[in-house]
Length: 298
Length: 237
Image (cartoon, rainbow over all chains, first blue to last red; front, side, top):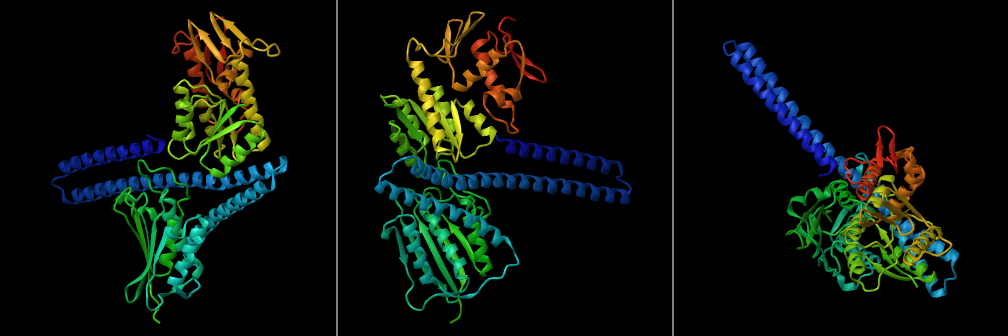
């Protein structure tokens, strides 16, 4: 048991004890004042208030302890995500500085350092973006965005970034009219890229991702990202969109990330008047994420 | 040629380390996770001379790998690399049986120097008798022998292997024999840590040392607790 679990157990036990004490005092009060209506009613009401207060207090305390835990996990993950590329870049720079590296190796090293710089940039972007989307009073640039074209662009980027073959991510495009939504193209690109990155990251060795753009109803647009990866336990399907939350499952190997990606996705989807939801048949059976946005009337 | 095992899941860092170790004339092998590292060290016919171990690994983490290796009787020197440079993490690494640590990002020259240091120590231990230039490094008291050169404690017919850190702590206590030694002094002078550290980790080390040298570890005679201060080593109680 971790220190936090112990703290939670302690506070829940304390709450049960206090509630039990309050209930017995309440019963005592009822027995003593059975024939006097005013003190009886007042007593019962105040005891009920005390009991309710105790329960609310404990619930908040436990929630706060849990949030604190998520926050710690986040700090650890971000520390790792920031320090690892820096450590790698320094290692290669010091190698180049102190040894005679032949030309072919030298070029390899440059590529590696560039990839590290990109990774660092990505982490910093995620953290900044998470801060930006949390601000409730931000104004959104709105322009018509063709989701089909945007999705194809994001898929190309993901293929390059993760060094994948072209058939690793299949696109099922919508025929007919372009599916246009009103929104900020940069933010919508972030949403689709985050979903694609997750699908690739949680796929393991064999990446087989299907992306579809469709109109399930005349006034809505869906972008669906489906993978055949590690899947998500049913109970966690909603919690994964919370800030800092990361899927916990036995046997799931540690996959790196900050716990911000899906939080950003949900925040942006909501700011666009849409929503995002996840579906999974369970662990080891893949996951499907659907982004639903209102379609712009043409 | 020395064989070095690099346990690191970040491929860039693992490849960079391998390049440098090979340039230093070592043979370097990479394991991308803890399970593979354990299998390589415990089953490989040719033993490794040093293990460079990352802490944040998929599956079993570095601390677990180190303690499982020690539990299986493998005393290959371990250098822990960790992005979590907090003093608690460092001490946790030493408790798990690591011999040395470096926080990430690290200085390449220092890493190479530390690896070579561990390799040198390993060669001394393997040479028997010890080379002339290394001083005979043995302390005997009450029928017990602390052999710092061989990193061993021999007491009542049994012998125990020591990790570098256990060795250093014992050496420090012997040097200050008879005087009380504070936990802070141990942190600063033995481990070179000076941050605000949870000093209880030292207590775990002392518990282990007592198991090696005391007849009744619960009622220690040689390695005494000095309340409110720390510890005192008394060779002739």
